Image: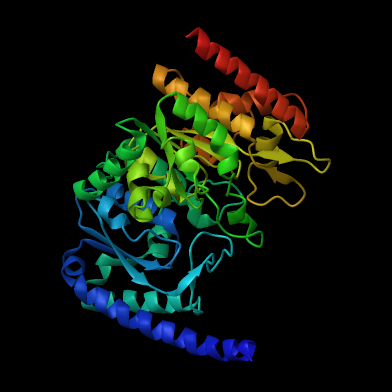
Length: 451
């Protein structure tokens, strides 16, 4: 009986969701009409997750400095941070909801049954395209058509760029953005003082004073049915806890954000020097925005959550980086590993030259970073930042990396720890990797003692 009721409810729910989201869209346009009517450019951004609220916004404000810009994003619960408009000083972000949460239910996402988010009522995924096409058409009628553009049209207008073979054509925005990032300065991202002070006071209280801060962004998105997104997820809290202790030893309070939670009691175990929004009992949306824009260091994984760090000039280390052509301006990269059919880990040059173009591997297995190499990479990074040392090897100088890889185009750096572990003459076993990582870690700690 329950299954029959659920089947009967689904089409009614989809229709109700469509009608409610359409009504809210009209109300949103009316509420923000003054901003829309006076904007130099309105982008109708019906697709894209959280990362695009950073990348699209930063691209357009650098490409069109001084212009009044409004971006309308389609909002799915669990994919966007609705407070993100607060950090942008020169672009207006407006959200139009496309689906709605069920009350009191956790652990569901339209593309990800494992993500830490709340469940949605059944909705028609194609409705987002219909609704945002209607919004675009209406605003083109009400405003001059040259001032209104869809996100796809905006990205299609970006000049042609050579990109890795596994990427869709619209991804040529990466090298375009990297040049803008280098050449066009932009204002710092920051929460209003009220929210900043609320979070900083809570952090100060659990750490017993003002200390240095490190944002730790851990990604857990999509499912194995969506390997291109799932493989960009990285390790859990356990794989990073050793590195967190090393950061604590160097005076850094670590702020966990993203798709992972601290286990109950762990903040107390770390004496307030490892914390998250739930442990502090502060809004997760504001805690993330504070951590990502105010920290002294940012350690993250390959998702949109790390992107505010480079914008604000925060030294950034990306762990568990995947695919192997990825990169970002002003960041240090620490890639995942790749295992062949026999289970041994491939050397760096083979990874880049043979498999760097790919986004999903059919015969090889992508391997996450182990705890020892995470700790070694973090220690090398933080000690280098504090001493002013060179943090990594320029990506364009690494054997196998091609000029059109995003790591080369973005002038990223590769962690010397990764190159030490994987820049070997032949394959190695996972056990050999761990042993070598522990030895590198021992050497780093010995060098620290000598200092």
